[in-house]
Amino acid sequence: QVQLQESGPGLVKPSQTLSLTCTVSGGSIAQPYYHWTWIRQPPGKGLEWMGTMSWSGSTNYSPSLKSRTSISRDTSKNQFTLQLSSVTPEDTAVYYCARARIVICATRSCADSWGQGTQVTVSS
Image 1 (cartoon, one colour):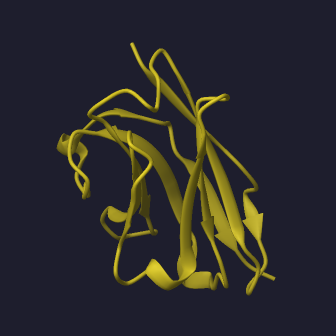
Image 2 (cartoon, rainbow, N blue to C red):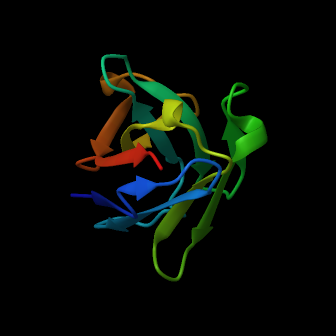
């Protein structure tokens, strides 16, 4: 059974770059045909798809975040990483990594495995 675990700082200052890593066990991030996804949930709001790194290494980003988002991977460590630049307090959210069967996943049902989520607060 695949397991995912997010790691990274819980507090980031405005204008800085947020970096989160998802470590995957029990399955390879290069295995066809899965999509490794970052999703966030701001307080009091629904899930928001941020971007995806597919098994092939290709990436797709939410249009609203594309200019600030980058997803990379390290297959030797079976990890994929989210970077979100120029953060503001509006980026405060619980951030999840997940394994999905589709590229754009913004609901619980489209991903079969989720990390527990990590709270990130943007504040000076």
